Image (cartoon, rainbow, N blue to C red; front, side, top):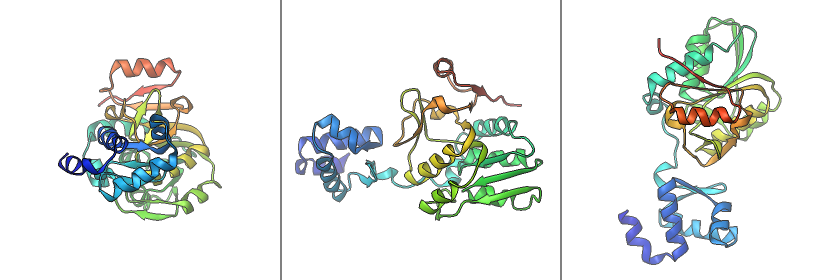
Amino acid sequence: MGKENNLSFHLNERQRDIVKMINKNGSVRVAELSSTFNVSEETIRRDFEKLERDQLLRKIHGGALKVEQHTETPQMHRQSKNTEEKQVIAKKAASYVEDGDIIALDASTTALMMVEYIKDRNLTVITNSIGVTMELSTEDHIRVILIGGYLSKASMSLVGNFAERVIEDYHVDKFFFSCLGVDIDRGISEMHEDQALVKKQLLSISEKLFLLADYSKFGEKSLFRLCNLSILDYLITDNKVSMNSIREINKHGINIVVGEEN
């Protein structure tokens, strides 16, 4: 807040409002700001350039992030959050995996937890997760296809244009993935563009879609929109999700499955 106050006299009113919005929401989109302030997208991009020089935001494709949110949360930190809930979700999700399936797993910690429960099955697993690949590397009856790309060290996954192009050639029976935001109106969203683009490609080639989302994801809106909730076959969550959220999701005809602790 101190930095914002110290620099505010260098900013026009619109730029100050942009800083307030990004500090409140964590991210903003060029198109939305263009509409909100009734100025061209080019004007908003020039605002972003100035605000980035002042270290008040970080530009990304199509938008900007709050400065402290510009990198992915390291996987070890994500693994320590809501561990019990994720374990419950992972076990329930694994119950939908059958012998002979071709499945895709994203680089989320919940998908990684699923691996322990599917090791006894004959499968083909497509993933961009180094962790998933390592966990399955000793299972002779499971064929693992690691999607190539450049290494995201925070999430220990492979991302980028090469990964996206490779995915186009595959077929997937069931895709199990997580996200950062689940909102009735905005749908499913992700903070990091590289992960979002890989997931979008996997969504497009998969017959059945399983979203793995613990209670903390509900009502959240993140920067990159992946898809509508309505395209899901199953949304698997934990018993801390509010009944309100469950009722709202059920209204949209979505199968919501609540995993239970042993």
